[in-house]
Image (cartoon, rainbow, N blue to C red; front, top):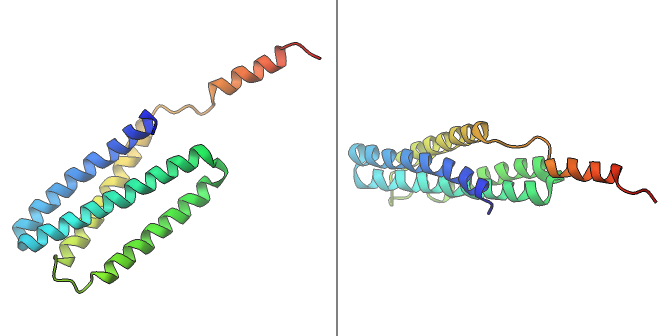
Length: 145
C-alpha cells in the first residue's frame, strides 16, 4: 500500500477508533458491561467495513479506473447488505446490548465519513499526471520516422 493510501486510511481510522472508545465508555456507564460490549462491536464493525471498503476502492482506482464508480456503488450496497445480515443474525442476542451497538455503529460510520472527507480535502492530489505530460512532449519533439 503506497504511503499516501496508508496515511488516508490512518486519518480515517484514528478518529473513528477514538469515537468508538468514547462510545464504549459512555455505553458502559449507561448500560453496563453488555452496553460497552455492544458499543465496541459496533465501532469495530464500522472500522472493518469502512477500512476494507476504502482499501478496495483505492485498489480499484489504481488497477481498474474505468470501474471505479460502479465498484463504489457495488461496494456500498454490499456493505449495507452485510450489515443487515449481521444485524438480523444478532437481533435477539443476549451477548451485548443491541441499542448501544446500533448507536455506536452509526456514530462510528459518521465519524469515518467526516474524517474521510477531511482527508480528501487536505490531500494534495494531482489533477494531471506530470509524467504523462513529459512523455507526450517527448513523443512530439522526438525524432520522426
